Every structure is written in structure tokens, then in C-alpha cells.
Length: 135
Image (cartoon, rainbow, N blue to C red; front, side, top):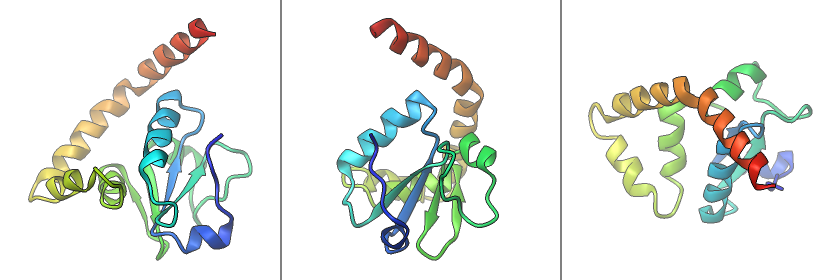
């Protein structure tokens, strides 16, 4: 089970990662990131959970459709900007955040992410099928 923090602990974190816990690829990626993360820097929120605390004005379907993080000031970042914010606080990934911040690179990362999003339903289907076979 992926760890959660209470509301007070989440507000003191640099970022709250908003992820789709129904997606097998997303769960695997989040588990990897959680293994790297300093617990005081990040909180984790599965937006697919029925009782998930979503940022004000947020839409569950939108949060499940793309990767998001919420900064401690309440601002919500999506897509490439969200990944760059996460990479910047993860040990071993900060170099990628620096690279992605070079002029024009965030747009390249966003384009790549949008291509992935087009493939995501098929990849999720394959991941679920593989998981069912391994049981």
C-alpha cells in the first residue's frame, strides 16, 4: 500500500504528488519515486480513491488523465512542469530537472508526455493483462 500523510503533514511538504492509483504503470512509477524520496519533501495522494482530498476547484477526471503535483503554496502543476518539479526534489533525478529547465526543453518533455498519454490506455491494458497472467 502506498503511504499517505494527513492533511497537516501534506501542507508542510514541498510537493504533494497527485497520481492515478488505478493505473498499474502509475503505481509502479510512484513506488519507485517513493523509494527515493525524502519523506519530509513529498506527500502522495491517490486521486482515484473515492475519498481523496483534491486541490480546491480540482476535477478528479482531470487529475487522473494527467500527472499533477501541488506545491506547498497551493499551485497545481501539470504534465512536464509537474515532472520537473518532482524530479527537482528527488535524489538521483535532479540532473534531469536541470536539463528539462534549459530553454525549450520543457516543451520537448511536454510533447513527449502528450505522445505517451495517447499510448497510455493501450499500455495500461497490456500492464493489467501481464499482471493477471502472473497471478
